[in-house]
Length: 444
Ligand SMILES: Nc1ncnc2c1ncn2[C@@H]1O[C@H](COP(=O)(O)OP(=O)(O)OP(=O)(O)O)[C@@H](O)[C@H]1O
Ligand SMILES: [Mg+2]
Image (cartoon, rainbow, N blue to C red; front, side):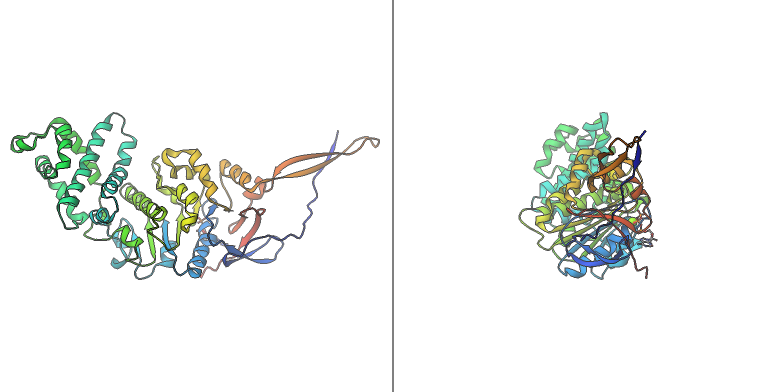
């Protein structure tokens, strides 16, 4: 029998090796010393932890504050399901995208105008397709046998947008557009669409509509079925997304409003607001990463539990991982929080695990508050790295030699992670070893 002697805990005085960054978040090391936790200036940060462990208040909120104070030019886009960031950062010119218009002052409410958004885009046809793809995305993702009908409905929607954008100079508001479409009969709608020559082949192929025999047309069975899906999407327009406003994401990105844009995702109106929020985030990402450098100012994305966008088994792919891995050169910095690494799969197309895991390569700084599920724990242990631990085993017989076993073990054990209290976290800054800290917050 061998007696195993546990490794001695030798505390070495070592430098933590964190670079300066901007601002300092007050924290305490396990040995009781106070330190200032640096906020990295241009690195993406992933913060993980179960609910109520301090992801938002201990790290993301003070980090965003430090960054915005240090960089007056920086624009900031906040995604959240509560209103912590809104209450902390909203200024008079800022815009808030939220389904329920009553939760923010009228001047701050973002009242989207999709026709104006299309007109302002570089490639208007591509923008129409993009909007239609996102709006019909949920229907198409579980389309099964109805795919052909839903695609026809999507093309009809694009045809409506094309007619207005190309043939009428006014920026029709979403309210007027959607209500006109809701009240139009099928014949009236097709007669309207037929004014644009590019729509005629769609009308004749999908609906048997002949422009020269408008008056005698009776809607086919297929036309009625397609209209069912068309109307389903019109019903998604509600709350502030169906308003009289003239606001666009393009205007925000080109400095027409304040510095901040808030996307407040109301989980009770999730079905209606989800597609719009996914489209807005995608648009912001495309404009920021675009090679022509349309948005020159540095930009901060505070994505507080953006994975909540992927509810009801539907993924919310707005290109977060692409932004995380490609945005550094375009001065895009992301602070992402999540309760579980598995939730992040919902932000990849089709819940693709590989894209989500690969996307973590875009986050050089990882902060772990207490994690709560097995995959997150093992993923964090891998990200935090392993080290060799020597175990000396003494022989039973005094004539034998002690044996030393060397095992590779995670630097931060499961017990270390699962025993973290609120406000305590392991932090890994780039290539430095993970460091336990206890963050001190000012609740005032
Ligand atoms: N460092 C800390 N010291 C003491 N209390 C803290 C600390 N950090 C957070 N708290 C408290 O814990 C509670 C939860 O914090 P927070 O909202 O940041 O959690 P969270 O991880 O973002 O949770 P959720 O996932 O639900 O959003 C808050 O009431 C906050 O006051
Ligand atoms: Mg939170």
